Image (cartoon, rainbow, N blue to C red; front, side):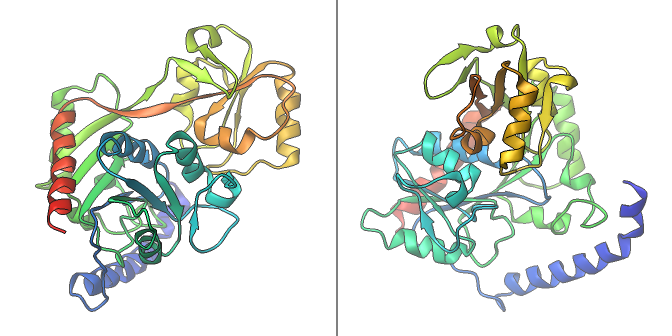
Length: 339
């Protein structure tokens, strides 16, 4: 914790007081939460910053889409549109936000919508003629106006919520007590070789009677663009420029075995300006360009002088994946039957 954050600690107390009152009002029903007729799964975190929400949403889509009509709903962070938007053939990353647009491109069989007002967004989805049977809420753990039927709380291995502090001293959006609302907790971005003893130590630190699972980022063996794919093993041997506009890009750079001199880092969800694109072209100097899947949807429409590829990722589990899958499937199946 740096000095500036330490001196802001009194503001953390005030922030915690405000968020605690808000949660108390929702818990007691003084502020109303709305439930819906379809299964609603909320994925989110207690902290600001990247915890791997999009890979987890994609994991749920792969799990549920074979048997259910799925819709995802997020606020569409940094999008240049307002209100409710349902993705269609005219959608772009600017209209939807980069992550919803990425999901729309990857899973064309599902509905992808954005709306900062999640209640309104769900009502709009359920008013469609071909309405969804399951709704996945992205980054909605604090969105108490909607009462989801199943809450998945994410926390990164190297930045556990139970060791963090409230904003602005730390990165927590609300008190650690908020984790009690979770039906399951997933510790994301773990080392692949995390031992069972280390997993148990983390469970002990969290200290909640909530099922806890451990996931890691699994990189594909291929990089892609709309025209072709190449093996990562081949890419690692080439001169390349690697670009990332994501939170905590170091594992991405490490996987591609690239030096700092061949990296360009931008803020999370960064929309690239003409100046940025010219900078990338100049630094690439005809080298192959590799970027993240999330960044690619914001870069794909530029006419590049050199090949550009993206490296997909997915969420995988160290242990007990089937147990987690069954919990989710049982919730969705039971909720669907009880409608």
